[in-house]
Image 1: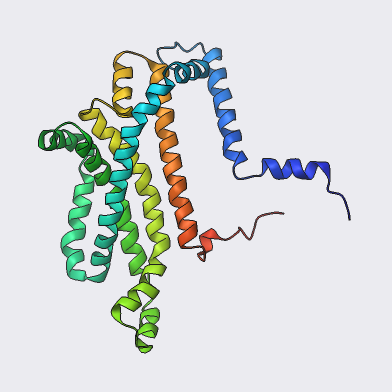
Image 2: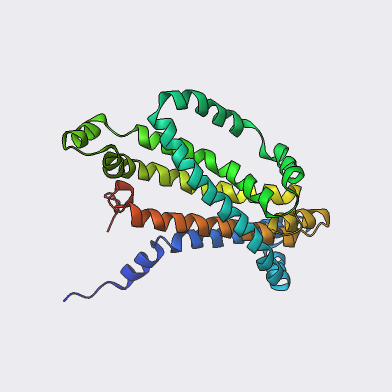
Length: 269
């Protein structure tokens, strides 16, 4: 049996989907460090990567503790977005009357800046978790509804007619035709929603919270603790990436048959 070339395994390693983003991240950090040193940027404007690393070392435990309420608010708001957004999409896609009444209101509500109305949630519900969850929900529900409507409306009428010709009930037609066909679009909306839910949770923490990474950001900016602020931003990015990855894994398990889950036919060996 022919032996593999030594360079083949190295080439495969660097072409791995998990290695490429890490390599790009390393390059960006190096460029960040070189730019700070080359242009002599003051630490109160942009800290060096080493200072951010030291902030993780000294305040890592605090950042992990503050990440818990932010994550809880994000996941809760995202769960509400899915539980409410998908049925709303079904109603809008299934009825022209509901669409004419409800869809314009959804677009109107999405046009209102959440930062402007977030203080109202503090007035109505007080300080705590509820305003953050509502803020995350309001930012996350719209992409779920839009993607869901698009998915349900894209079901071909011939497929429904075929199901009816086979004496399938309305529920069976929905379960076997409409829902599977709309699942890829729904998951696309969920991926956008879960990242926006992180933003919504932070917005809620900006206006009324005494805990969470948003509170850490606000306090760090006020005290000019930029390394801590950058460390909190990195923690928020990690939360978004992990939640996005979880949704992506669930999508692969639920719709393995879809074209987006297959290997790229143009990929080189």
